[in-house]
Length: 363
Image (cartoon, rainbow, N blue to C red; front, side, top):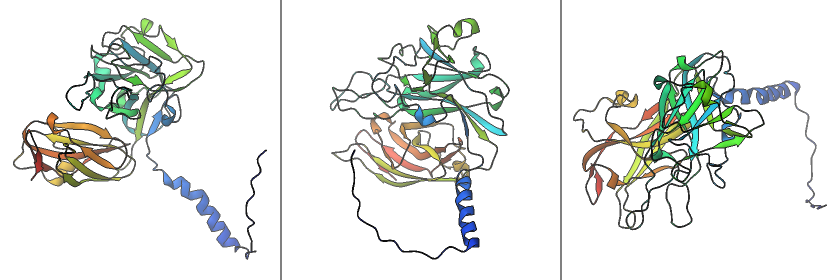
């Protein structure tokens, strides 16, 4: 037994609280936590109640061969959907440890194996083409660390979400999620991202879909042939209750040109609002001579022609290093985009840059 000696503390008797004041303080103590969460906060339907507990395989250590690929898909039967008045629906998965191509250049540059990850939802373990949606590209998934090189873009696995039609959710019965890749290059754990997992039990509500050839299973008899237990895949449904919008304000704080020691220009951004999930940089190679009003820009009206530049950031500070070698040369429009847990997006004002083979400068 270890005993710890603490210094003596002198106390002084205080006058008792007035009964009315005591009742008011107790009422505040009970009501304040109930008001902290918005009444329309998203409802997450997953086997593990806490999405942050999906921390196995995709962050490091033993990967369990839990890769998502062209020949290796995942099927998850979700728990029943809680009753509610929902306005939007999303399906998602937590992914990490994306693999890279051989290094190029000096210092060595590592690019992820190019590809896409798709996801689908159905009331049966059989999926049609109109039930499938692109979840993410491999370019945004955190990379797997290595022992031989200093590697950038390595980090914890992250949740990726994509919106689906609300009517595709079975609110009174079963919901099956399928996860796979249509990219033929993603054939093993040595080339593919890893699906995160959480601890589970003996019940079988997860299945491995082998030899799917880039498509989700269509035969319900064969799709549930290989059942898994003890580990739960990080696949979930997110339902957004009907409610008011949640204002966000996104702005560019500063732009710094590249230097000899740090060739990549740096954008410092700010995103204000409730429960912001991620923020990223977008560019548009089509130069609009008469940009839309700021209100229309904030609503995402300039969607056509915009593409993400680099990787998303899931936590502050929102500082981006822009690899201008991957941008088209010439004048571009650039903006910051942010998304909250409700799936709402907001955008900064546009600003113009000019990209050349050697430098990039703002105007």
